[in-house]
Every structure is written in C-alpha cells, then in structure tokens.
Amino acid sequence: MSENSWTLISSDDGNVRDELNVCGAEISQAAAPCQIDYRPLRGGRREGLHQLTIDNGAIRLILLPQRGMGIWKAWVGETEIGWQSPVDGPVHPQWVPLHEPSGLGWLEGFDELLVRCGLYSNGAPEHDEQGRLLFPLHGKIAQSPAHHLEVAVDKESGEITVRGVVDERRFLFYHLQLVATVRLKPQSPVIAIEDVVTNLSATAGEMQLLYHINFGPPLLTSGGKLVLAAKRVAPRDLEATKDADRWALYGPPEANFNERVHFFELLADEQQQTQVLLRNASATEGISLHYNTEQLPCFAQWKHTGALQDGYVTGLEPATNFPNPRSFEAEHQRVVSLAPDESRRFDLKLQFHDSAAEVEQAELAVKKLSGEVEPSVASLPEPAWSFGAET
Image (cartoon, rainbow, N blue to C red):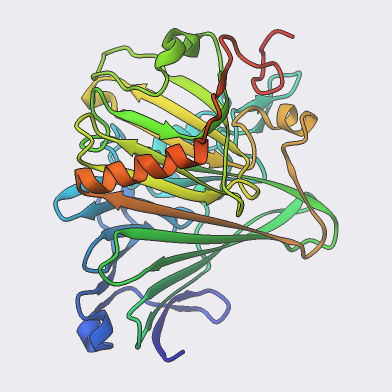
C-alpha cells in the first residue's frame, strides 16, 4: 500500500508538530475532496489542547488527541452530529478534577460526541468503607493524552487513517495501552473505529471499556426513537421505570428532568454483528452504530432530555460491562481479564443516514436481526444488572 503519512506526536523521540494542513488533491486524486487540519486551540479551558479535523468530502469530524482520542463533534453537510453540552469545551484535562471526593469531576469536561470510558474502570464512582474514592466516574482514559499520533492517506483509495496511542498506568497496579485507529473512506458517511487494548504489564491485568456516544438536536428530537434488536431490557433504577414501555421514545426538552437509563442484551447475526439506530421524529435522518456483541456484550441507553440549555442529549453506550461500580461488575464477571501482553480488539462504526429511504433501510436491518424474537422487558431493575437493586 502506497501512502503519505505525517507523525504529529512522537514522545519517544521528542518530535511534536504544532500544525498541519493538507488537502487531498495534494496527496492523490482519489482523496481529492479530503482535507486534514491539525492546530492548537486557544483561550479559556481549551488552552493547550490540539484538535485534528478530518474532512472526507461527506463527513467532517474533530478528534481530540489529548482527551483520549475522543471525537468532539462531527458534521454531515450542515447537520451536526453530537450535542450542545452546557460545558463549554473542549476542556483540557488539567481543568477536570477527576479525583475530587464525590468522584463526579469527570462531568466538568464532558461534551464529546464520542468519549471512551475506562480503561481500568468505566462505571459509577466507587468509594471504600471510609468514604475514600476508589474509582472515579467513567475512569481516566478520556483525560489521558496520546503520546503518539499519526495520520496517513492511501494514495490509491484515498482512505484516511488516524492512529493514536494512549497509556493508562499506575505503578504496582496496572499498565494498559490503547491503540485507537479511526478510518474514513472518501465521500462515505461512515466513521470506522478500531481500538486495541493491551496489558503491557508482566503480570495479569483487567480492563473495562465503554463507548459513551452522545447525540442532541437535530438527530435527537421529541418523538425520536431508538431502534434496536433487544433480547432483554431492564431499567437501571426506579427512576427509569417511569418510562415503562416507552423507553424507546424521546420526549421534548424538560427542565429538571432526571436521567433515565436502561440496560440491554442485544441480538446479533451469525457474525455477532448488531445494529442500533437513533432516528428523528420524522424518520428523515438518523445514525446507526454497528459493532460486535462478543467484543461489547452490554448496551446502555442514557436519556437526559433536559432543557436545551442544560444539555438535551441521549447516550448510546456499547460496552464490555454495565456502568455500575467496578466491584459490582467484577462480582458478576463483567471485567475483562488480560494475561501479560494480551490484547483485546474492539470494532465500532458510526453511519449517518440523511434520507427517509436510508432510515427505512436501517430500520429494516434492525428488524431482520430481531426476527420473531419478542424482547423480555423487566418492570423493575434486574439484581444481576443494577447495583443496589433488591434481590
């Protein structure tokens, strides 16, 4: 494969670029509609961050290498894919008090379209018997910078590949490494993600990974719907039981709305591939997640349909586990064990649908996965799925 490539960060040899701007036509005719732009951000709490913008002619996205290789925002034409968080981001990790006593400091930097949660823990905060914080909300990887970052363009196909390497380590405890790869083909409304997590320690280790993928208007609307092939569904807590059989539907912005979360076991095809669709009320626009249920066996839907100024948003969350305290998930065998030098791979695609015909096709694909199966919908939290549920 013949390609042009640029190394933007290489901490091993101390080489760091501050800016890059290239157009596809400068690289190959196959990549003619594409553009790559890398630049520092200035002002406020974003000072010190860099953003990497990739435009493949169909979709434009912004990656944040210093925030765990998260995807901040994306656009298809004039349509923004993401959400309007009350957090004025992106926020440099130095301003995120991850280990404050409540364990909720992660929320002070939360405004991405796609943010990874993990790698050692990824769920709710957990404290010991003395009230000391053991694991903060959603883990540390989103506040960890890439120490290697490179961009490549295939001269023949025009495919753009971004590869970043992020470590999460603690002396005497763990050394996990994430190699995050994002691929975009010219003129395709698909973001393909390939993540590999490796235990670099000489001793056995553990990991968790959750993709917190967040959408607001215009994809999220009153009357919008989540379409998926569910085998089992359960509310996380009593608040979520208020949705009863309306968990798939979204209401209008509502001040003082309390978040509602549902947990799922999803159906998949013979290759263990599943598809989850979020569509607007008119079924004219939507977005699908495609992933492997063997890699990511758990799925959570997070509803926070609060007032627009407070963040009208839903999170679609494929994961290795449910986002409970880590010890609860370990008790229920939802922590991934890794031998020394062992790796786990995770593949995820986001596909935008910009017409009623495409949305209909996506709905039919999900219905095909469901077949004749009627989901088992629990009326109360499942004790094995939800921390604190009564046994």
